[in-house]
Length: 371
Image 1 (cartoon, rainbow, N blue to C red):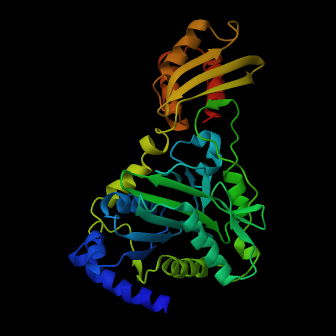
Image 2: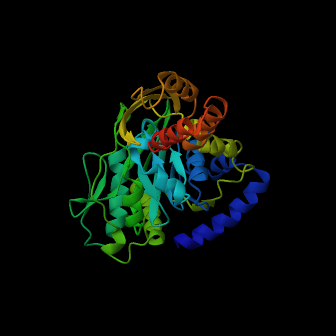
Image 3: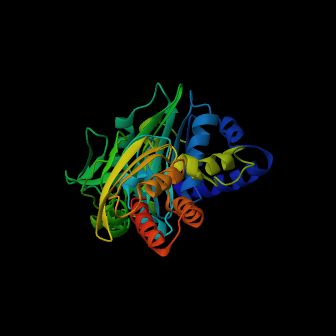
């Protein structure tokens, strides 16, 4: 029945796209509760749709459930430090997008084996405990013997110890949303690899993630695949809140349907948001270059090198050269490509002789190793 409704509503939304907006569609349905399912697997498009619903839809007398999945992506919380939370070199090598969401909470890995569930309500009706009851109820509807429960931290655990869902929220002035992940058949090997930072010596007041052992639901019961879970969550949501709203598929890339959503996605993808919103941090790195013991101290603010100090033996590299190099790095984005450009310009305009060039290049390799 649910999938027949989905098909009918998909046809309806196809018509709406040419003559109206999703906001108008919400108003015209007259439903107090609606279930949306994204046709996109792009992390930035789906996060943008969350923002669009929160910002543009009147949620005072309406609730919305949003179901979505992504191809592999790492998502940090609003107040987190990605250098501390994940293996950025591996993320870059694998071409995995890094995103920063608007909500708080810890860092998560998404892939198509993970289901994302967002509950939109008015701020007055915001209730994470009840929302998680919808999720656990849906899981036990599919697998009656499944031992799943919500914790005091608003995680969902399997058999009392294995985390299968993390949770985060955003509370606006009048509206709110609570979203959670659900590990059905995620790539746990990749998950554990990308969520393990290789960096040492970072000092920050950013919100740290709390590591937990995880497990896939599909390992417990083959009925708990992503499609079945999404359908069960939608059905349980309607039962729990007394709704009979349809399941509507939405393409979050369609600007005509959601005016402004593409700019929201572009903003979420920007370097200024993903890295530039990192809370101020410092990094201290002792290393050895060509037998010389060196210590790097850096302060990074808004994703940009604010201060750079290199403690280097004067007989290895002249103090004046060291000071000039540190000055050249100040104001540069804390990322390998931009530091490479700055160091290359410094070497071309300042250094003389192969010895200084070789040593400066050695310094550069160690400095970018923390980026």
